[in-house]
Image (cartoon, rainbow, N blue to C red; front, side, top):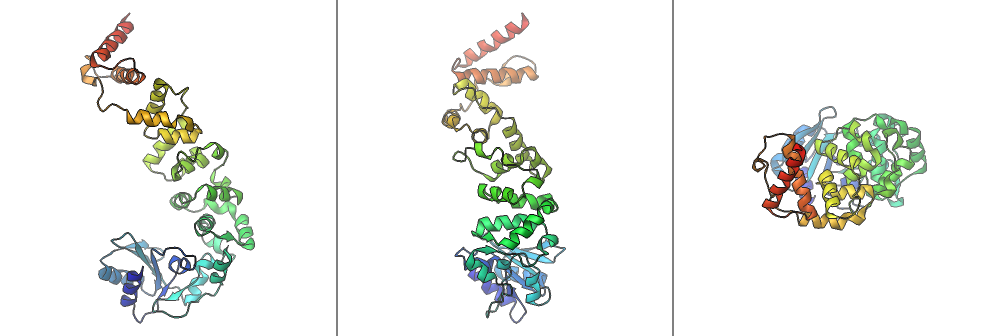
Length: 349
């Protein structure tokens, strides 16, 4: 962060530029400041000059708002956004008072027209104006995320305003909604529900109590738990869609026998432990782990060694061999071939 500030001061020397956002907000909270956010008159030019000096990569962050970002080699970023009027005018357009604090890039007195520093000291999250949720309904979700991440609590009037606007939570794009939801832990999701924001999204905490959080606790498990099929209304990835399907179809093993564990894993891997956590059946976790560790590296037979034409029967026979091997009834290639012959013979009778 120190190096990024030095470069920004070099390329914007003598210009009207301010450090805003998390870089100003997080220091008083004792949080590590990772990224830089600067408002200035010509963000594109600033981003390109900053990139040349820092060997970063500039790209447009928002064509609509004229914002630019520079990605640095260490994974950090520097954002440059347009200064809208005076710095006080600009801060008046922000969401919460704790995000409406600015410091001159060149150094000097902090500008804090809405008492953001006082609210930080008091642990409060307060809206800058009564229009914040009208201007961008995503701020409804962001409020909960900021409470969680910063350890703040919505000020009473701000909470009342949020509750009055709760139905607007579905208005932002699916990408933006999903991005915020992925950052909420269980506590954040419970707060979302308490504020009346989860219901309009089609979510529920009805299954949250059964989840074995000590076994698996991940953003995608939380999303599947609270949204279920409604998760598919958001622009999820193909992998998350498959994960959702596996968990929603999952049935717990009847017992801890090798055969039952094999069948469960067959239906749920590579997410067998996640499925157990979702079902609240963590008592099977150890036997699933043992089965994973003892998984044979090679099958007893390949499909082209069965002596039958390609087709669905090949897969059925290979799965039969794998299950009987897991159950311990066969262990050699010869026993597998005998099993195939007996099964085919029985089918021909």
